[in-house]
Length: 240
Image 1 (cartoon, rainbow, N blue to C red):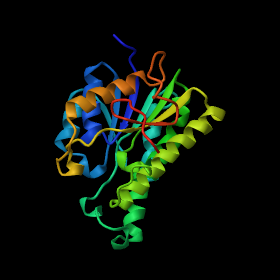
Image 2: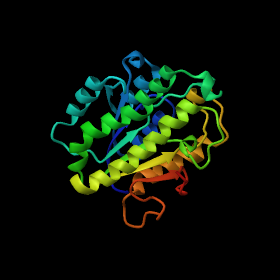
Image 3: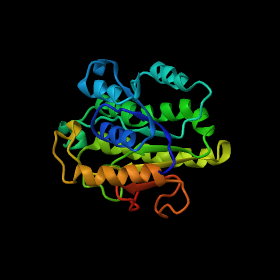
Image 4: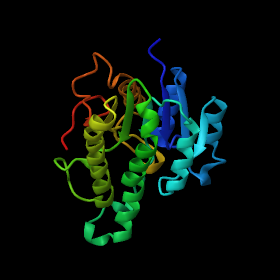
């Protein structure tokens, strides 16, 4: 069996987070997962707990909840942090002139500031791992090179997440060289956030994404999976 990791998934009860959590549990990894307080009684949370996953309440917009969650690990190492929670509004697909400052700020609070805070407060635990990894669930909409307009709030906040991913890689090189980072586009798969529509196959994308989680930072990993990089669900390098 491949190496077993301790993995903390932020936003484990929905969409990509839930799909990753169930698959990583099945592969024998020790998985922790977060959900927001309003989802406490959600069937997905109950199912994950039934499968043996330790869960904790975290809200990306509540710094105190992130600090409390980090204390769960005490002085123990954490191998992998996956920042999966995010927001995207279907009504965002309109010219930026029809959006408000609050619309943009709301996206930044969740899609950018949240991963910044979890990475900051969990950094000491990741540094205790032989090879700590932060994997940020990004999007192809984060690409400036591939911008087709619309969805300004989502695009801008996810683009900032990519910059955060790169910035952390450089900074960790100075303060904790054993911690590496990666931004990944998980595919346009059908989830609640997308209104259950998507062009990509969930099983194909998630199988490849689980492989990326496991092999990133290991000997023999594809060259495209570079520290601070930005890749597609299949490991192909993407243009910032």
